[in-house]
Structures are given as structure tokens and as C-alpha cells.
Length: 539
Image (cartoon, rainbow, N blue to C red; front, side, top):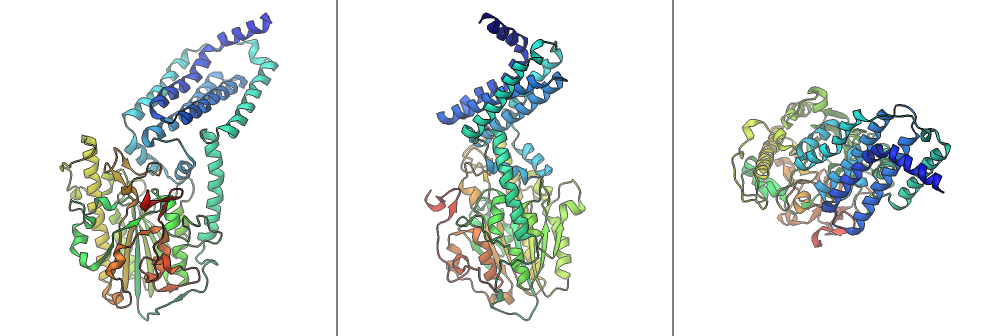
């Protein structure tokens, strides 16, 4: 009995430095989790999950024969990265890393990732990163000695059994806490979803749109523009009662606009929102077996479709918007096509729109995807729109940084006002039967209701959901489309936009639900679902 115990102590003494190094990230996580995780059960599960990961990392290290120092460095970095992601989520969002975050990561390109890090990297995260990387300084001083334990079959079997049993334990008891487990399951689901989306949305026409016809056949030129904004909330728009003049140009033509004052986005992230806004998908039927997109609907109604975007089309995989855009007859991604890696203002869309408006097609639908007021806000407007830089507001959570960011966001909204008004004027000058609808994919909370800037679904707030929804009609189109003032007060979830779009263009088809159209007499008020079975109006 003494001999095995003696060997265990010799082994522990031999690998105490390596063990301490691998244990260190767990201790960092334990310390941070004490202050970041309020739920006791979650605190225990998270720390057990990380402790199991320690055992797996150490066991893997023991099974590697050659290049031990390199192996330990890579294993440590892998482990530390996982710890950094887990703690960062708790610091930024007050919640654990989840599958929805994985979907967002897969849809994010390198430029968006850089913007995210630039915008959210704060002193807490920098300190965390430094503390996790600091132990690597001691690695060059490790001495690596040959030992009989490295080649012991019994020990090899022991470490293999540790890895297998730990893996089973994670996937049975801690799969919602372990990053690798979350990533694996989420990626499988993501591939299935994207494969289905590519099948449903990539072709010009869809078999899932049946018996399509125009309820009003117009023997004249038509141009309809759908402007998809980005990260713009009504809480910072003059048109919706904000105290700053962030919409001077749209306010000038306020009498020409139909301003809907109670529209929300279905989600607080672009990916999930656009999937619902631009297709049949909604909370009651999130993954329709027979889905179709708004672009395909326009195509099959006899329109020539155009997609103009100031967002980069490629993340790790093609994004939701890119898949939907594939069905358009002509596509223009101005950021990647002409400007390479530099930041591009939304005004880069204007000459492309000029070109599209001059094309000979008799009936056009132009989809425009803006970068809008996406963070970091200071990149979204030229210097001449830095009107609010010196403003001092009565903030709920006052600080120099909060005031600076608030002013930058308001500048971005001001510039966005110029962009949307420019689209309207270009459309007006065509003197055609035309319309323009503008809405945003989601909003932002800019220190409005919490000490936070940006958007997240974990602790979503009203500014993140409440979005602008405007319609402009030319004089020609006002004769055929009547929008009573009482319609403007309707409570609406923009997940049903495809049905409103159909009414705007006088399109009928079998799958259309008039009760889901914001501008239809048959509209019926329904529960505005968000997240998982949460009634937005009774939360």
C-alpha cells in the first residue's frame, strides 16, 4: 500500500508546476464568478464544469510525449480562451455563454469582430486578459525531465479514462455550461439552419409562394424601396419625441410620412431579426418547412429586384441577409466591392442607387441594407455631422464615457436622417408610382435604461426592441394606397413585415395573412412575442 501512495506523491511533486499552471485559470474563474454569478446553482455548475475541464487539459498534457512545452502552452491558451469568453459574458451581459451567441459568432465577419472588441473592450476585460496570460511568462523557466511515469501504461490508461469519463459527465450533466459542448451542438444546428435557408432563399423564385397576383395592376413605371436600418432605436429619434434634433430633414417632410409609433423588432440581434422580418418565419412558426423570402415574393410578382448593401456579405459563412439577397436579380455590396477594408459611410450607396433608378426596368423593388448606427458609433458619420459632441445630458448613469458615446450615437442618428431623406428625394425626383419604407433591424440602449450600451437578448430593454417604421408615398401612389391615421397607433411586431410589404405593393398570394399586415383593414392585434413566450406588452 505504501508503494502506490509513494508513487502518487512522487508524481504530484514531479508535475506540481504544470498542474498549478493548468489550475490557475480555474482559480481566476472561481474568483470572478464569486462576484459575477448571483445564482448559487449556476455558480456551482459553472465551477464544476471548469474544474472538469482542468482535469481533461491536464490529462491531455500527460498523454503527449514530445514537445511538452509547446503542448502545455497551446493547451493553456485554449483553456484560458474558454475562461476569458465565459467570464466576459458574465461581465458584459450578466449571463452565461449560450447557443445564440454561437450563431452570432458564426454570422460575424472579421471587421465586425474587430468593431465589437474595440467597442466593448474595457478595463475589466483587459485586466482579465492580462491576468490569464501572465502565467505564460514562467513557461520558459520550466525544466523538462524524463520520468518513468510518462511511459507508464497504467498512468496512460488512467488519464484516458479521466478524459472519457469527464467528457461523458460534461455532455450528460454540464452541456449547457461547457463552451466546447455548446459550440459543437450549436454548430450542428447552425449548419442545418443555414442549409435549409440556402435551399429556401437562394433561388430567384420559390415553390412556397403560390397563386401570386397583383390586386392593382398598374400600367406605369413603379419603384419601391425597402430600407433596412441597423441598430437604430426610436428612443433617440426626434420624430419619436427625442429632445435633440436628430431628425431635422425627416421632420421637414413629416406631413408626407406615415410614422408608425409602436413597432418592435422580434429580436435584438440582426441575424435573428432579419430571418423573421424578411421571410414567413415568426414566433408561432419559427422554422417553417416551406419558407420563402420577401425578395422572392417581389420577383414572382413581376418586379426586377435589387439588393444594395453597406454591410459585408461574408462572415464565417454566408450571413442570413446574404442568403436572402441571393434571390435578387442584381446585387451590390458596396463595402467589399469598391472600398476594400476601409470604413464606408452609407452615402456610398447613393451613386449605386442613382444607377439603379436609371435602369430601364418598368417595375423595380430596391432593398437597401444600411450600416446605420451600428457600433462603434463614431465610425458611422463624417465629421460635419458631429453636431452633438459637446452636449451634456441628464443621464441616468452619468460618466464622461457614457456622455461621449451618447453624443456619438446621436450624431450617427443625425447622419442616418440625412441618408434616409436622400433616398426619399431621389425617389421623388423619378416622378413615378413609388414608395419607400424604412425600419431598423433592432434598436440600441445607449445608457437609456441601464448602465450599458449596445444590444443583447439576455437582458434586453425597450430601446433595444422599439424601432422606427416609416412609409413615404409618392403623389401617384397615394391614390391607390390609403393609410388612415389610426393605423399609425397599431402595436406591431416587425416579424410580420412580409405581409405588410405585400399590401404596400398590392400583392396577393395564398400564404399571405392580411391580419398580419400593418396597413390592412383586416389587421388583428396579436401578442407581440419576444424571447421564449414573453409577451412584450405585459412583461
